[in-house]
Length: 266
Image 1 (cartoon, rainbow, N blue to C red):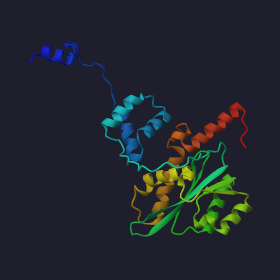
Image 2 (cartoon, rainbow, N blue to C red):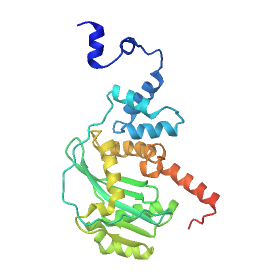
Image 3 (tube, rainbow, N blue to C red):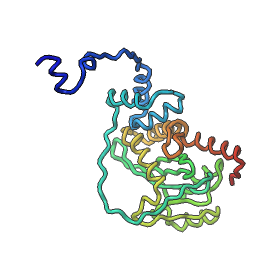
Image 4 (cartoon, rainbow, N blue to C red):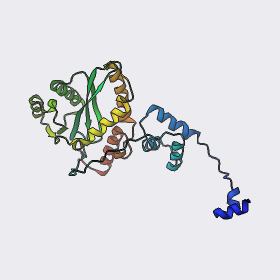
């Protein structure tokens, strides 16, 4: 079939067939930037990388970056969610001030020799700042309260702590410690982890980026890798629900905005 008839058949002009774009773009800078982020942060997707680029003052069009992101094959495979019946929705309130409410939870993993260890994770619900991740073979109630006391030396005690109904948090010693420091304990309903959604989301991020990405030979390796990751999480990793800013940067921005508007931070 001739070219003329072929173009008529698909309803395009011959000039469109022969057209070649004269626009020349150099994507090497974007390619190097995305590859660098993918190597350093293996669980970052496009949205996270784009927010990081904006924070680094990279004035790239998001469609162009997404095209290159797909061409490089950096897309993260997402496991399909299980369909479960919807229950009664309950609002998870976010504080507008620091030290109003902290969330605490435990995580469990194993070393290369099969020995189990746990981590105590503590975040401030205000800006999702990770205040503590303490890996240990044993985390009884007394050690938990001692660790929180160490945080409070620099940051002060919160008004409220949101926890599940685990034995460490349900212990009488924990309740006495909370009463001594005038801290209200907010227990979530059994079997309702969504009521502690901030720390649950943080746990998933920590597991994806650290626990599932590394094979640990000893507890010291867990502590060292966790400490390095915490710096990135608090000061570099963009957070979608915090205006695309890292937790500590969001807190600074929020304080500056409050001073500008005359808002009183309690």
